[in-house]
Image 1 (cartoon, rainbow, N blue to C red):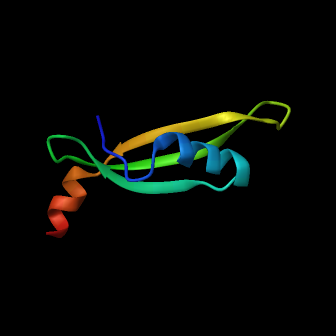
Image 2 (cartoon, rainbow, N blue to C red; image 1 turned 60 degrees about the vertical axis):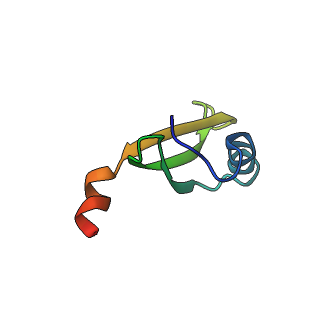
Length: 66
């Protein structure tokens, strides 16, 4: 499970309140790197009804840069 700097609940609330996509690099207990992307969830009638969280494995990309 990735670790987060700010609490995830505050980041999610911020995205829902501002409608801005948020991205943050996080890592798990084993040191693997991920990009966390949080987006507002819009319904078919264009109402905000939560947030979508996506974890993208960027470990290989980070290791190639080093």
